[in-house]
Amino acid sequence: MTIRDRLPEIRGKYIFEASLADVTWFRVGGPADVVFMPADREDLAGFLRALPEDIPVYPIGVGSNLLVRDGGLRGVVLRLGAPFARVEVNGVEVRTGAAALDATVAKRAAAAGVSGLEFYRGIPGAIGGALRMNAGAYGTETKDVLVEATALDRQGRVHTFSNAEMGFSYRKSSVPDEMIFVEAVYRGQAGDSEEINQRMEEIMRKREESQPIRERTGGSTFKNPDPEVSGGRSSWQLIDSVGGRGRVVGDAQVSEQHCNFLINRGQASAADLENLGESVRRDVLRETGVELHWEIKRIGTPE
Image (cartoon, rainbow, N blue to C red; front, top):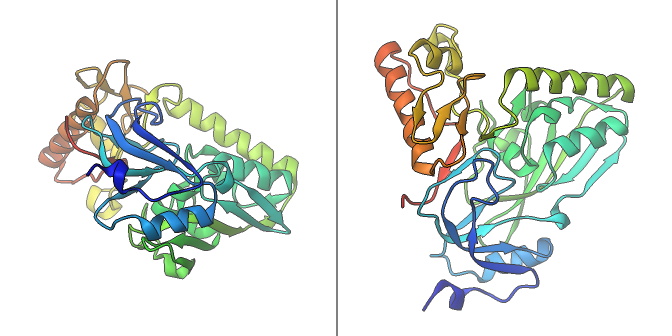
């Protein structure tokens, strides 16, 4: 019996043997057995309740910080679409679906005169991923503005996590991996829309000057290490110190502009990118004694 024969009836959409290279920013990776796009939260909950427990589920947002290996994914890839992308502002509170783009949430907050979410303007992802990894930039993190997050477990049951219950730390939350985020509530401060927009423009200017945002990349490759361990050096400084800048494996390259970014120059495989990252990690550990940890999420099987 194939996975197709074991899937429950849904109101949303199934796509079989779906290309994941088309939906990740690296533009690499093998196919998924099936992609499920639910019609709404109830459709998602019913699917999770009825899906056999031995079939894995992989939530994927916009694929901006994701490396799918060349052999693809066995199981179901979950993609939340427009029904999960609504953004509502009430006073200084912002309620948003997990599929809303971080940048969209920042812009909607700014238009409503809500300050505090400007940092999301410079993060190329969706809210679900931001909750999972405590996304942050320019001195602010998700934990600084989140009120609560709502998720469904593998049995389709609803759970609401307060900020404290999210267990946030650097680029991480302690919510179990099986939880699928569907909504978040943020609280900012009253501000002037024009001033907020000016701050977001400055964020985008700095980002464009310092990061290869027009390349096929996956965002920051490695988390910054503990300053006490690294002597205050960030990941890019450690990579630079071991000659990693511009390093090439296949058609994958460490960015010349910012060497904590990997780039697909056009024909790279997922293996090229992962092997390049691992070669940098090995050299940094050998020459500096500091172990770098992947920030990019790597999923799937090798070819």
